[in-house]
Image (tube, rainbow, N blue to C red; front, side, top):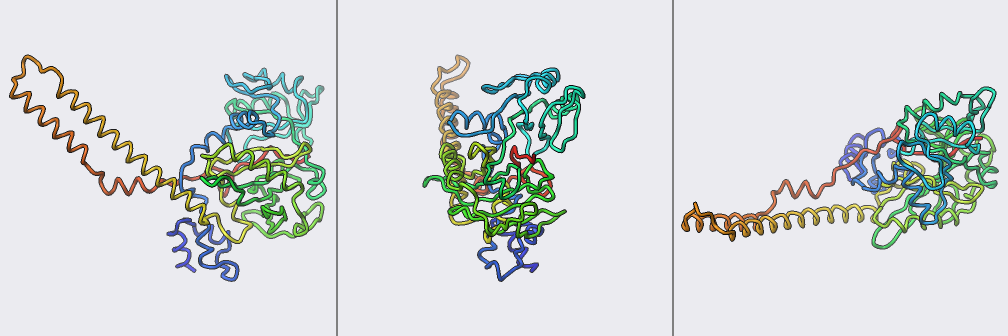
Length: 418
């Protein structure tokens, strides 16, 4: 076993020992040696996607999707010192936040930072108690308006208040009255966009968000072609356990098919085609009372736990690796082109200096000698080859660590229990 752990750590997936046990890769009856090599570590995303920062900013992403005519959560207000959002109230400070909560909000609402992950700082607010000057949060408790305003200030005054999404009736029959989202992993390359994996993030009734790192929440694999629910796990303490039926409705997961799956798939692929350079896309999509809604996007695909834990193979299939190899190849080509342009510009600069009118203080012989030396330098720059270590470094994109909550899990949706 130790040798196998070592080999997987040295492989392309760079799996860590704890991930080996989390995925139960010691089970030789379930996994072949080749299949084990397909699992990707959450600390080895293999390349740094420029889309991660775009996707992390919920305001920018929502505006982009809204502009494309795609379904997004309704934003009632944005809290920021300078930024705005189409059709939403602009709240510039504590006084504006307090006024909004007391008289302008259309309850129920859901609050969340627009540049944070893992549902940190989220709040489900169902109403306002004027007598107590307090808002009513998801569990029925009353929290003073001033305290909510203080929380928003502590989070850096970068906050959204959105209309609380309600679950589709068919979803409520399966898991109770809570909105949930599906992580849908799309690959995009020269051949187009395809949905590769999907996992249903099912919140426990005690949680306002569906992030799988929260105790009691569940994660279920979905067949991307049929929408049929597969292996389902529940988070307990520091680990996970298989679960056969929903703890509230008692509906067996093996008998479930995700409602309106074709609509869910069509919406996410419609969005994915507009981001062709975002090669790995991790969409969180909720089936609400108004149909599928695009809640969030992980611009590098998100934490691979979401796409691997409930399945019998990892992400590193032939297509995934081909995309990674092509990205590395293009980066190497780009570095080579930049070096070539730099040498050409350097030579042109030297030629310009050599052909400039000589100074009166410089003799013709000295000028001739300087010209010869400058041309020699230019020729050396033109023919110089990069050092071996430079080539090697250029061919190995630096891995990135995905920020997240305990266990490294990725951001959740505007999902709530009510």
